[in-house]
Length: 133
Image (cartoon, rainbow, N blue to C red; front, top):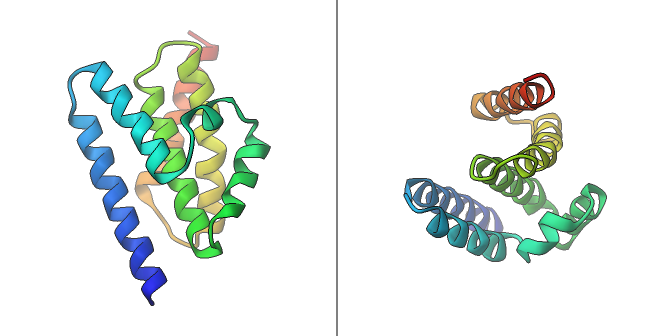
């Protein structure tokens, strides 16, 4: 029970921080807040930018099983938000990292999320637009 309370508090805290990040006007402030969120909720920003997706997926093994899918969702959200802050080709790379995470979560979470499905659809459209301008 305490573990589940911790996870729910962590998720609420994460999404509140993400909302504050989105409300910032200056790109420098957004970038700094984004880096801090990676550090606070997942680990080194550089790792999640440079590691292969296999290495990223393996990195979730450091968390208790009941936290893994939530941490994956946090990372998918961070990739998705950061893609909107970056220019080509970096936004494309971030979208290609976010999509498989969202898809994995969708298949394994057992929770239907309209917001997740909307984001997956948006990512697919944005990637398609990049390939066919």
